[in-house]
Every structure is written in structure tokens, then in C-alpha cells.
Image (cartoon, rainbow, N blue to C red; front, side, top):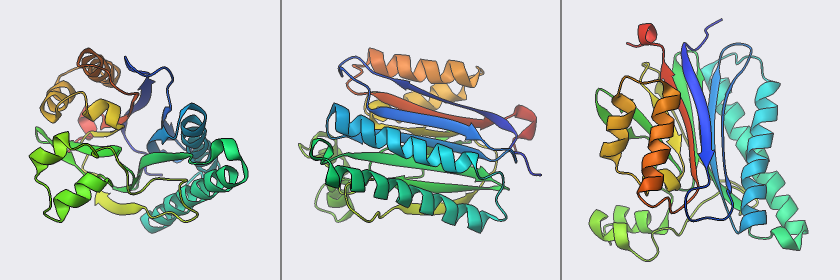
Length: 252
């Protein structure tokens, strides 16, 4: 049994502006010691957004609880892909048949730590970062209209930061009957991993995030500090974080 040696946690916060919290986050471990992190940022209004983010968490949590081990990294990859597609189907089916829930959707980022690898999945604009040797590395790609314009050379990065359509998504879970999801596998070298909704990274710089995650404090203290700083900087949205870091003696 190859248990993942580290500490993990998740936390959500309503922020300072929103009247409800449509974000959800989880950090789970199965009986084999595999770790699953997930952040979902619901959209479409209170009922719609909360329904979608809650549903993806319920589906993934339930499937993970009934998956005591993975035979291989490849099987973990396809399990995560299949499970997220099932959540997408359930959200879309319900919204299609219930007028009050039309438009329900959620971003999702997930990381499954198994064996010596990490399986990553992303749809929308929540993010996955890896803190490696004093630098915060973005592992996911914002699936937004403005990021598309940047990648096609129609906007600069600086122009994108203030563009009126910078929050418009071109992909999310639950919106369409089928789901397009970015997936990849990376080596687990023991570096800290953080998943977050845009309520965090829009209210705190990556430099601030890097400094806070690099200090000699517990994971709980680090995450609480991140949320406090984001709220002090405006707290313009719900904030969700799922975090993992290796035990000191397990880091490479």
C-alpha cells in the first residue's frame, strides 16, 4: 500500500460581498491512502450555483468512498474523468427538467494523488497551483473568453486584467450535456499543491500566496491567512481552497 505522506485540508469562506456561498471544496483520503482534492465554484444564482457545486462534490465524494484503491495511475485518470462526466450529466439532466435550475453550472478543479503521481482535472476558471522551490506554478488553464483572446494574440495579459468580459467562461461543468475537461498527469515530487476558486486569486497576488505558503506554519494557519488576506483586500467573492503538503521528512 503506497500511502500519500502528507497533510490535507479544505476550507470555504463567503467573503465580504456575497450574500450566499456557492463554493464547495473537499479534501478526502481513501482506505489506500490516496488523496483527493476538489474545488467547485457554482454559478447561475444562489439555487443554481449551490446546486451544481454541491452535486459535483456529492457525486465525487460518494464514488471516492467506494473506491478503496486504484490498480494503476491510468485507472485513476479514467476514474476521475468518468466521475466528473457523471456529475456533469446529473446536473445537466436535472437543470433540463427543472425550470428553476436552468443555467446551473460550476467550475471544477480536482487533484488525485495516487502512487507517485498526481492526476489533475479542470473545467472553468478555478485554479491549481504547485509551490516548487519558492515559486508558485500555475498548472491549470483558465477556460475564459478573455484568456482565449490572450492565447490567440488579440489581447495582452495586462489588457485582460481589466477587460469587461474577463469573468465570462467558455467551459464549465453542468452547462452542456457533454463535458470537455482538461486532464493531465504529473509526478508527485512532494511539493505543496493548492486548488482555489477565483475568489482567492482575484483578491490576492501570486507573490502574496507564495510568501504565505512558504512560511513555517501549519497548513491550517496558512489557509486561514490566505483567506484573511483575500478578505482584507476586498473579499469580492466566495473563497474556496483545497490544500495538500507533504510531511517534512517525505519531501524530496
